[in-house]
Figure (tube, rainbow, N blue to C red):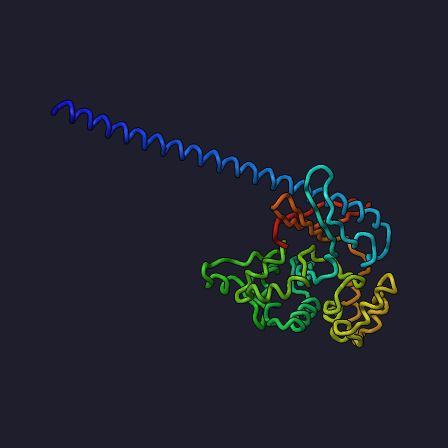
Length: 320
């Protein structure tokens, strides 16, 4: 009887030991599999980044070769799409296209530097009016213009007619504060109370976040942006086939002097002229990368410096 009990206990110990060993083996196998998958994912992501950087190098060559021209137009070589093309011997496919960021409204231009005795960035009333016009054309509440001014400007006094500083943002859930400095990405618009993803999707194709002195390029701007740039102009471009047909025929349309001639309010011409140009140095490169079944989208902001050297300022995967 005693021997029978001992044999039963030995069998139970053996079963427990076997279960523990099986669990440990399964855990080791799972961890090794996950480690292998993480390594493969990291390697694939690194491949995608290197492919994106290769596209950036090609874009830089196109921009550098075009750098000596006085006008940046949609029919230049930089504007021609690339691919899809395979990077030879790698199985990596890329497709890329450059876009002129100076064709959009620069959100940071809502403020301008005020010298002594103020010595800080304050609201640029003319640019606010342009932004209000753009918001109105896109059926977005125009009060967000003053909210964005308070998000960027240096002071802590809210703008009239819908502005907001710390007291507004500290009542949000969770509470936060406005940065009171330039924005680095247009998605910061989503931090404005009540702005929402729908408004952002509507506005995003028309705005950029660049240094506040970057001017609007008339040669590449959309009709909506041209109309908003001076609401008192005599010609409307947004709902007219004129813009598309003339840009096919001419290097730049509308030309700067032609655009200024259409400004009916002579007092506004100096402010309009100070904010427009026919050349661009800021571009966004969208690169679609496919490696096997994995697909990536890399957005790169490129800046063409004096001397036409091009450098990458910002990169983001999967987000504009």
